[in-house]
Image (cartoon, rainbow, N blue to C red; front, side, top):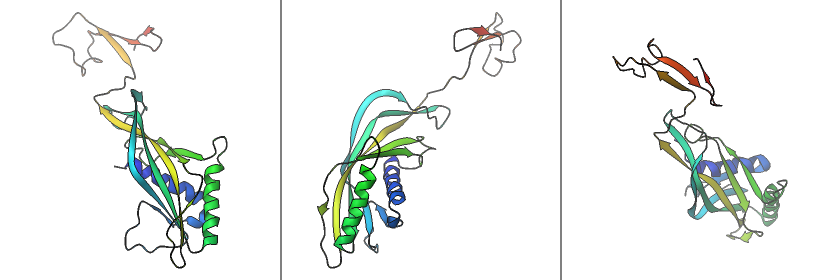
Length: 212
């Protein structure tokens, strides 16, 4: 089962790779493993703090049904501050990639500073959902300063829908009404359409009645 939160962050990584080809293969979602060989330039997408749940009114059906008796509901959203941690070999290189990342966020038409899109990595579980990422800081912060390394950080607010799966929910595609005076044997769902003693009608969306 795909994990919605991590897939949303991976989606941001894919957007950044598409916008800045030089970062292809050099973006890490989460903290890198201790034995990871750091390449320059590189970018880490790291959640800082806890994911915050902002509830909304229950009952927003997303229209996704992973199973016949299941439905996916949107009950709010999860927000978290993520930090883009940029590591470069030189200060000049750092400034260059800072500018490219800023342009990635600020270049979005009509809503500069915010990027969003549809994440489809969890379609089998919760369906496609929209994740958004908003530049939450106007300035890069200096980070680690080692020989031949130049680091900086900037904060981004990530927001994804809070999706839950409810059981015992069925979708009606067709309503049929059956009338009979014969109750021996009792009609069942298996014999409803084959029992000649049952007069059946179909109720249309507009309330009209037709023969099946």
